[in-house]
Length: 613
Ligand code: MN
Image (tube, rainbow, N blue to C red; front, side, top):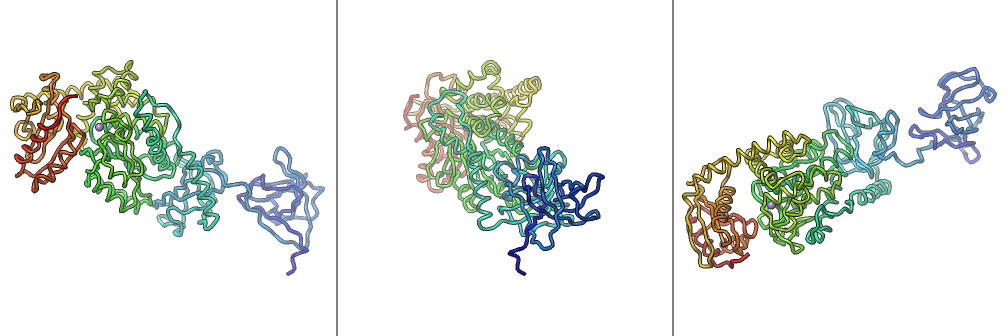
């Protein structure tokens, strides 16, 4: 058929709104109803106009097709039409010309049919519909598609696809959701356009705010670019609905760092849309017993992550390590993660080994910028948390003071963080909070104690309960420590070393209570603190040991424990030696049958270390 001379009439697709209607254009409509002044005509489900009776040419019935010309679109949105009689015409469908509705604008479109474009970041099959989590440049929302209860809708749609969805915006259980009418996987340039649009906007949106730190610090200033880079990657993970696993050393410093980051991430997840409980399945905080990412830890993490990936269509996680993650001891786990292509970020103050940086996508460490472990993980984590989400500042600003107290930081930053919260917390408060964290974590074992820990840190807006809880736990912890000290102090053995240091040895296996608080590391630390007070101003090293381990604490002796451990490993074949930690606070493991040989070799190394502060 020759169509060159035929007249074109338009059909509005159902996503079109008023902005797509043009005056002097002819549309195919449907007769909706009659009034005595004229006939109402629908141009699509949402747009209707009126043909005044003077402009009606023929007789009609309801639901009948009718050709109408748009005479005028009035300011109030009313459309004046006139009937057209065209014997021969060609039809063209008008697709919506305005861009897709941004997910952050969905709340204002409830009850309306919209078109959205975005990337599929999760596909969850429920007993009813299939839930697709969609991410665009502005936010995250769910789209529900239903074919049959429990049956996967749109099986061709895969995680990471760019899609165009048409559907109605609904509110379900206080949560927005698009009920899918149609979903198309975009390909070629269309997919690329959407992907680029999301990526460009995400880059901007993930950029952390440029805010000053809570305290003055040259080291922190020099660390700022690394901190912003880490904060940006965490923000990006949140905005793309990528799960985050936060692993931290299970002591007061590590907990403070992780809790600050947890608060920032969880509130950002809630703000950015998606499931109402997204903060629970997209974020997991887990304490690690060792100050490094143990193979046991990553094995558990990968087990859960891979199951969630298969069962709930979740992306593989971003792993964030704090108060651990920067030493050679982390390497077995980092290698494990690399096989799955996982991204790992580290925020740590342990003396770093450069090899880890081949496996990390971001690493904040004061040693990189002329600082040391005195800038604790809790200080770093809290500042990173503020970069991730500045709104958390009021509830996390005291955490660096707790962390610095718990880790006995001697950096000038510690006092500045304490001064920042002086009006709210005394030194004793900070000590009790740090002790209460250690004590509670001992009984929590592998659990995060998400809400309990917040109460201990006065983050739940109940200061009376906080005071009572902190006081009670600290009392119990102190009683337990006193009990332990009364049992073990009489068995401490004193040795004078060649370098003038006082060495104290305590066998915590036979002279301390086992499987209770304080554990061997903390027991040795308490013994050390008491001896440091007795030998005020003198170099002191305390060695608490069991059958196959030793814990080292030192003051005024210039040691490098990680290096000593590596040397012993090479020098004593069959010693089964491993370990590490900070330069002057750390631990070493060995096989039981070689204990005396290892300990004597260790003591020889300590006695040749320089003294002074
Ligand atoms: Mn620490």
